Length: 229
Image (cartoon, rainbow, N blue to C red):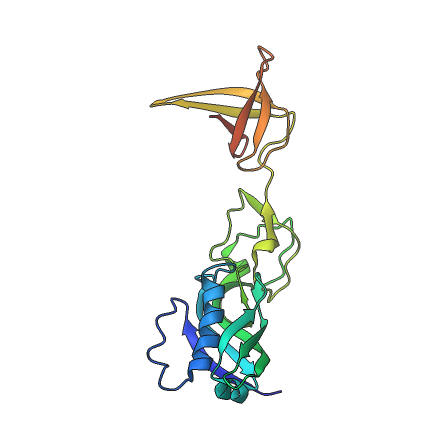
C-alpha cells in the first residue's frame, strides 16, 4: 500500500490558491472535505496544532477520477485514518483510505509522576513540538491548576499529556464548614454554613445554617466556598 503526501495545511487553513498549480481538483476536493470536517463541524482542530497533513492510498486513481459526490468518513474524536469515496466521470466509483498527521505543541512528562505528587512542578513537564499520527482534540495547552484538578492516574516519563490525565478535584466535603458568599450590587456578605453534599466546581449543593437550621442551595465557586445566586 503506497501513500502520497497531499499537502501540509496550516491550522488557519488559508485558501488553497498556492497549491492549485500542483494538485488536481480531485485532490483539492478531498483535502478540503477533510479540513472542513476537522475544523468546522463535528471535530474542532486544536489551536495547538501548527500544521496538518493527509496522505491517501492509490492517489493515482483519485487523480484520474475527476468526479463528484465526494464523501469522507472520519472519527469525530480522533482523525487518524479515514475513508473516502467519489463518483467518477466515467460512471465508476473510487474508494480509498488515508491517514492524517499533525505537528502539535504539547506537554511531555520528563519523569514519572505519581498521583499524590506535586505534579504542577515545572520540572515534571516540558512543552515540545511533536509529530503525531492523527488529529486529536484532547491535547492541553496549559497545565491545569492543582487547586481544582488532580491526576487521574500515574504518568510515565515521555507520556504526552491529554485532558483525560486530569480530573476535577472535589472542592467541598459533606459535613464540613464552608464559606458562604452573597453578593448584591456592590455589597458582599459572607457567613459560614455546613455542606450537606460533596461538591465540585460549579455544582449546586445544599448547605445548612448551623444556627437557624435553615437549608438552602448554593453554587460551589472555590475551595470550601459556595455562593448564593
